[in-house]
Length: 213
Image (cartoon, rainbow, N blue to C red):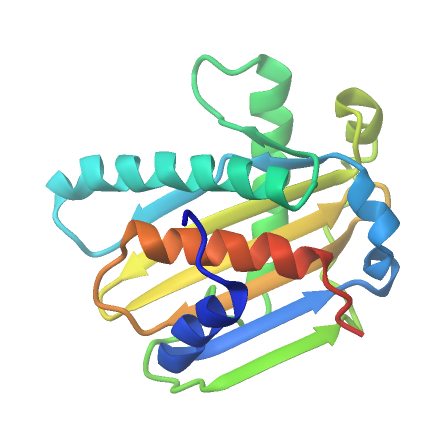
């Protein structure tokens, strides 16, 4: 089977994870919102602190991540458009979406999350909640809803560091400038494999549809 069951997948991650948190805007808890298209901006795999010749491995894992996102979105019946930002991208896509991705990551990076904590902090928690104060981006992206046909944009990255893997999935509503979904994990693993990516993608898009309240 391409996918392992979600319960087993969660056990695999939970047994070695130091930090897992899933937060969602209360307004986004309505499953009707998932009927709208979500544009995933340039999902990435980064190998930090490794040799330069690992670039080929990172590219291979990144391509696998994109394949799994496209497959999982179909399985979960989510309209999920993956957009790569390259020199060949349309100008509007590259300029607007790159700027939006940077803004979304920065808004969430200002909080104490696995995006910025030191590996010695020793987090050991699994939490699910609704945002009290969702991180906000600038109100400069309202026009993207008309331009690209949706107010929902996500950023997904997997970052391999020595001794751990950081996984994050952020989503913003550009009409309200709110982060509407944030999933962050710090997993204690020495090597990033394709099966870890598959587990994360399956869990992430399945939890996206779940009612967290």
